[in-house]
Image (cartoon, rainbow, N blue to C red; front, side, top):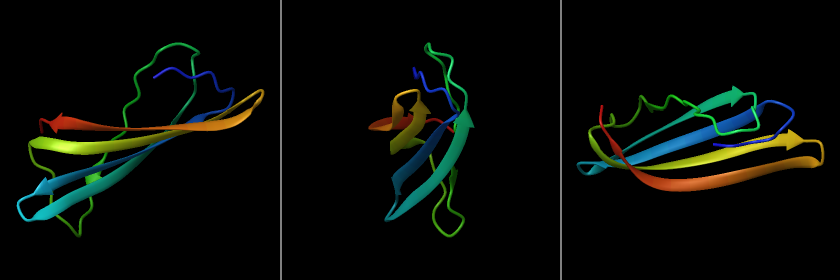
Length: 86
């Protein structure tokens, strides 16, 4: 991602996956400083203990990024289907 916020940026990620007749779901959070250029951000997501575990296969990942700069605050969201490998 690329960001130009002056304060730390917050990223919230949720993952959902159909597992058999149920659903595995979990979320994660990270906070980091922007470099003004492209950077990789890792957010660890663990399945909710009261539900199913994640398995290899397709899952839907939704992410929201929130940050503030000199001219105000803003957020962006994205949703993608990904392939879980572990």
